[in-house]
Structures are given as C-alpha cells and as structure tokens.
Image 1 (tube, rainbow, N blue to C red):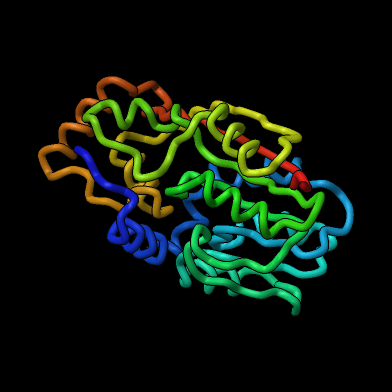
Image 2 (cartoon, rainbow, N blue to C red):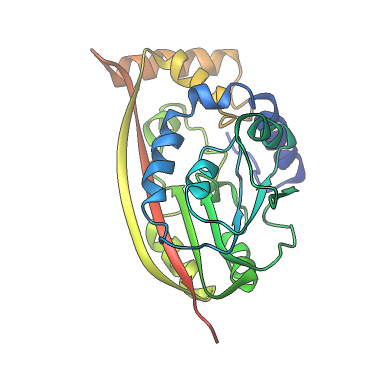
Length: 256
C-alpha cells in the first residue's frame, strides 16, 4: 500500500493522532523514555544558555534538559495538547517559551543547544531542516537528537507490505546530511533493541497509544491477516517481538 506521507493531509493526520494520544502517551512510551535517558548522556555538562527542544511532547526529554542549568528554554511541538499535558506535569522555569507548529517550517530564535528525542524520523525534508537548524545555532552550539533507522519494525512492515509513516534513514544518510548542512559530528551511537508485546494486537495498540500509527493503513481483512501472520512468525514464550534501530547523535555547529 503506497501512501504519500509528504502531503498536508498526512501532516494533519499526524497532528490529530498525537493530539488524541496526549493523555495516554506517557503510559505507553516506555521505549521513548529509555531513549531519552541514553540521549541525555550525550548532553555536555555546564550552563546551556538558550535551549530549544523540538517535538517536546509530554516532556519525556524535557525533564533531562531541566536537570541542567538552562538559562532559557523554548519548547516546540506540532500538537498543542501534548504541550498542555507537559505543562500539567512539569514545573517549568518562568523563562520558558512555547512554539506550536511543524519544526520544519517554524522560524526559531537563535539557540545554544537544539535537542530532540525520537522526533527527526517525522521530518519530510531532513537535509533542508538540518541546514535551517544550523542557521539558528550560535557558533559552537550543539544539536543533540535520537531517531529511528530502517531496521525499525521491519518485520512488522514486511509482513503485509505496509510503509512506515515516518522517514527511516540510515545512520550514514544522517551523517552525510549533517556534514552537508554545516555540522561536525561529535558522537554517533547506533543501537538495536528488541521489545515484546503480549500479541500483535497489543503491539498495534501500543503504537496507536503513542500516536505512532496515525494512518488507517489496512482494511479489516488486511488487519486480520497482519495479526494472524505476525503472531505466527514472531511469537515467542515472552510474546511477539519487534526490533528497533535507534541512533543517538551529537553534532557541533561548524562556523564558516
């Protein structure tokens, strides 16, 4: 099934999906929380000046940013209900500002650090977006992010031939795009994870509860086929498994 994920309709679907799941996100975002913990290890210690977080969601990574001395915090997300949920749960500095909208099209103020946990896979034009972020970073500023690679949910997608609703670039592609956009990569750490769900229905439900399956990809017959074949092919005594390919990257603004 071919879907054009670069259309305005697709963006509207993504916003609607994450908006609906704002209250259920934290309960089901176990992988994103552990990703945030590992990504936080790439943050440099010391005063951070002005920090911009893209796709802050409900604040899974924001908490790690606030563990450091941040002079000014700018939080962005494409779905306003996600930010509403964040504000309910986290005590924020008075200097915090909010920017709601698509990170690829917003005009951001200059920053010393740009951070994003499990967000860049939603970009439609990654190289152009990286170049824009480079232009908004101050000299020697850092970009720190995690994202998913093409091995993510590959078995799930291949079972019935569905496409990913997100962009799954290889690590080499991200490193090339960063280099071409004016960054020097300081750290690039790949990771492979295996997660388990009770069955395929539970796996699908968990993806929906974090807004990661925003499209009606299959009709009733296709969904039943997916559940039947995935249960058959990827079931273990611990439940069905899914593989995730994850990258953690820190890059420095290259002046000149």
